[in-house]
Amino acid sequence: SRHSSRGTASSGNFSKVTGKRCIIVDDCITTGNTLAEIVTYLRRHKAHPAGICVLFDKRGVREIEGVPVYPLFSVKRID
Image (cartoon, rainbow, N blue to C red; front, side, top):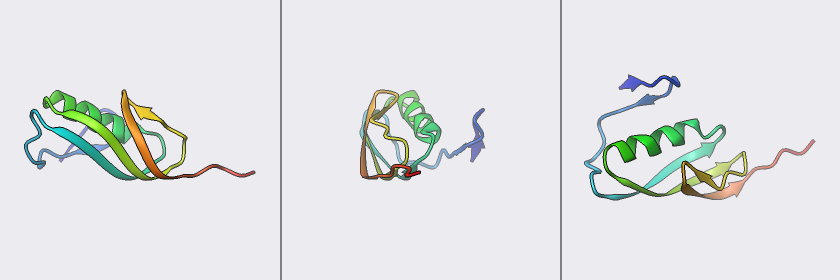
């Protein structure tokens, strides 16, 4: 595993993605930084990120780096 400038880790242990349409799956969007890094990684390896599926979206994010986000639940803060 190696660390990016943002401090998140990425691994080179993925299946071959070149030329593939990919769906990114994550548990939660808090800042979106990790998912943005994954989109960049996939594009750098000539893959097409088609969508991002998350269980919880804490920010109301509709897209990350031009990739649509599909949350199962949107969490809003109640003061």
